[in-house]
Image (tube, rainbow, N blue to C red; front, side, top):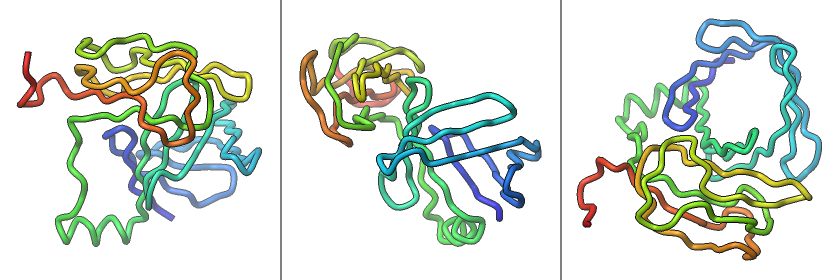
Length: 175
């Protein structure tokens, strides 16, 4: 089966035909994937590299994936749904805003930025402790931090909006 996938705005075509192999943009990869808990903890062995992560459904065909401290927004559509959406002209446009949400319940260890700070894609924004592990939540875009909704010591639930970052080229920003 073929899937059209978008990870933080970057497009991939993923084909799943065998239990232990996937083809991503024409390149085959050995894979072993297991759900470890009902809370979304997963184990992934990809080309002999081991990864643990948290995968949770955000809405519809959009998933939040926390892997190595980076939060990814993953949109997955099968080929049929993708073609129908494309024909209707309803494919999502790239957003100029990123909302950093808690991928799981936890305690805020640190907020490393202030409102109006410039950040680059990959900069650590917030450190969240959950299940005795510290997770660095990183900016998925270059931009300006427009809102911080948490501080160190706060307890948050899954999906809680913690920060907003707007692309620095976005119109309407005031000094």
